[in-house]
Length: 278
Ligand code: C2E
Ligand code: CA
Ligand code: CA
Ligand code: CA
Image (cartoon, rainbow, N blue to C red; front, side, top):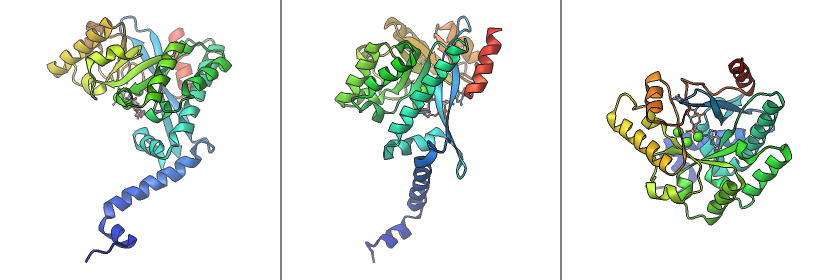
């Protein structure tokens, strides 16, 4: 017979219980991660496909915990979103990136801009754009030295605050990119209405370049369409020379991936920048 007691539920859902237990463990550890200095930011170069010049970098969050080891973002970010921790963590990422930009500028290293991934929840905060602007002001950085990468889902949400945050950010001069483009419900017509400055073609399409003609057609079409709207196009997850050559051929503006540079610590990217400038 069914027993509605808590123990009975756990007994009949062993898989669920293990998963909940792991989530809980991650959440508990994550609560202390910032003050214990377990978080860091890795930077991955974005390169102009025509000239090979550096056009910027993407900031990617890293978490190294003594108990859990190196936890991949795809594992802990959804949990941080659910429990609200993404707000303080996301703000820490922005501040860290701005500090890095300042440092590199003081060292005379040329980093045109850094892109930061945003969770929908961060945009729901009405004061978000204001806080970004004040962080930039305090650091004495131009708004166009920052860009935010947002998945298209954010634009589909009927959350007014998010939309107005985006418009205010864009008006202030901060760059906005649509991330993972092509994987969601992207409709070409609504790209026109959004306050974005660039489009990132998802890795799943890049993987098919020089392998699957359908992916090649999709990538060429995205590039042509984005250019007709005066948007910059970046391809993510570029691993091979063949993919890179195809992207250059169809005038995709920039490439990001293991071929042109893996995500690096701040110190390693400093060295990388110095070596290129020689
Ligand atoms: P994303 O925004 O699509 O980032 C690209 C992911 O592809 C990164 O994974 C990057 O390390 C990886 N990557 C780059 N080049 C290559 C390549 O050539 N081949 C392959 N196989 N992979 C490549 P990562 O760092 O594990 O990040 C995963 C996701 O976590 C990101 O996907 C992003 O959605 C999210 N994320 C990372 N940092 C943050 C953050 O600070 N805030 C938020 N909200 N999300 C973040
Ligand atoms: Ca991204
Ligand atoms: Ca992606
Ligand atoms: Ca993504």
